[in-house]
Structure formats: structure tokens, C-alpha cells
Image (cartoon, rainbow, N blue to C red):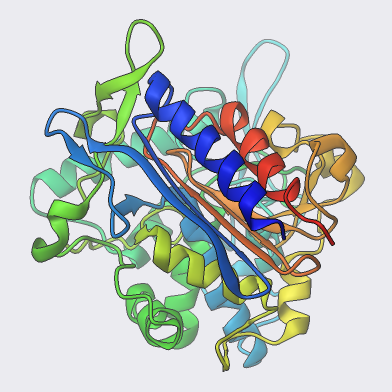
Length: 396
């Protein structure tokens, strides 16, 4: 790795974004062959308070949480707690008699029997047919109504725990037949519920015992304790000119994360720091091991970073920021670097709704982390340039 080239180009890139106002702040860490070769932080954790970003800043991980939940499930897989093709209903009975919402040419909605049950592998690969809340399909609208009801109960002091959420979601019709389509949605949160069923522990307790403490992740959790709340980065959205200077509020999908939640979202509920996220990424780049601590076998990590989508499912996986990638077990995996414009085959990781990104590359022995807090995350506007700068600094 040409560290001088990386430092020069990366500093100019990241500082250019914050100086121009394209980003309010950004933090990045890169390791090569186990050693940190770049670390930088630019901009403001809070613009109004004139608070610069610091190395211990705490970020909302959102969907980067999925990597942790997938790791938990693979630990339980290694213990023989389940098989990939076990029906979900074996562990959460409410999923036994699901229905699929289908619309005819006139727009009439029919609830039909699925071609088969949801199996656990469908959850890992986003092929369950369980969507996120939205307004595009009848299922997404039903999920939105459910989440509105959950929000009202939270405000009334009657929050739903992870198992209650899983049971309630089972009442929502599927948006596609299990196994037939990639449909990004609530599947990994159900894996989080399965961690609890299979282990007998709350998801957060399992993560703390089996991932956070062994790896020394001291700032990763489902909420920010009071003594650390001054380190939480403020989230920003675009102003009228498209510049990220408008601080987002709770009603704009920005949870405050200031108290322990009843529902521990394995799909998007963690907070973390760049330092903690980097240690987790280094473990994945090390094929399950970091600093003599092994969390997963190399064969489990290989399974996580292998493309699991069928040719038909790949037709659904068409986001701009996923050019060149397939999808493994809750994580993207690089198949064709020539389409992405960077990287190497087998690089894998995921991102978060607020623009964060992590990448583990066992072949090149790289661990790469990029932390911001903007909504929309706009990864495709920034990540290719960022990743090109990392891979362009390799000299062997």
C-alpha cells in the first residue's frame, strides 16, 4: 500500500467534500494487512454548535447493523441450532400460514397461498417477501400501518419488544412468493428475533457477549448512554439548494437512541463509532478472526460473502450503488469489479441509511470504513470516489 498516496488523495477528497458543503462531516479508516494506513475526520458533528467531528464520534449505524445480526446467526449456525432451509414457522409459529398480496389488472387485491413457506435462508437473502414500510405495494402499506400502530403504542408507554414485533409482522401479507424475488425489507430484523429464540438471550445481550466484548467494541449498542450522548453526531438533510445543512428531527426517521429500546432492531438499530466498526470489519477481512480472537470459522465467512441470488433474483438487485455486486448472507459481495469501477472479487460488506459504508476484502487484506450522517445517504454520489481512492493506492 502506498500510504503517502492514500493519505494525500484521501485527505483532499474528504476535506474537499466538507469544505464545499457537500457533506457536514465525514470520518474514514482504512487498514491494510492488519495495520491502519489511513484515518481522517473532517467537518462538524453539529454545525449549529460548531462542534468538530472527533475520532470518538458516535454514529447511527442503521442497516450496517445487519452485518452484526448475520454474524450472530452464523455463530448459531455453527452450533447446529438450525438449518438454512428450516421453515421460519418452526421457530416462530405465526409464520406458518402466510398469504401473498396479489393485484389483478383491475387493481383488486387477492390474498393467495404462497408457493412454499419462508425458510431461514430467505431471510438472509432478502427473498422472504417481507418488505419495509412504504406505499408502493399493498404489503408495504400494511407494514406502514403496523409501524404507525407500534409508534403510537411507544408514545403511550406500551412499547413492543422484539418478539412482539416479529409476531405482528406475521399478520402482514407478503409482497412476493418466498424465494422468488430479492425484496429489500424487514427480513434481517426477523433474524434478530430468531437469535433470541435460538439462544434464549435478548439480541443486544447476545451481541454484547459474543461480538462486542470479545472484539473490544466499547461504544456499539442499541442506544447511547447518558455519559456518551454528547458524542452523538447530528443528522442532516438537504436544504433548498441540495446541501446537507438542515438538521433532521425525530419525525424525519431520526431516532434519538437515548434510551434502551424494547425492540432491538437487528436490521437497523445499532449505534457505533468508526473505531468499533473498523474492528468488526477487520474481523470479517480476517475471515472471522481478529487479534487472536476467532468469532467465526473461515467457511462461515465464505458462506456470508458468496453470492446467493439466483439469476432471476439478480434482476431485482439493480441499485446504482450495487453495480458489480451480488448479495450473500445479509451482505453485498463483489462479483464484477469492472462494473463497479473499483475493488476486487470477494470484497463484501454493507451500508447504512445515513450514508455509512463498510467493506472487508480478505484477498487484498483490506478493512475500509466510511462514516457520515445524512439522509438520503447518497452513497452512489460519494462511495465510488472513496473506494477508488483506496484501491488506487495499492501497489502490490
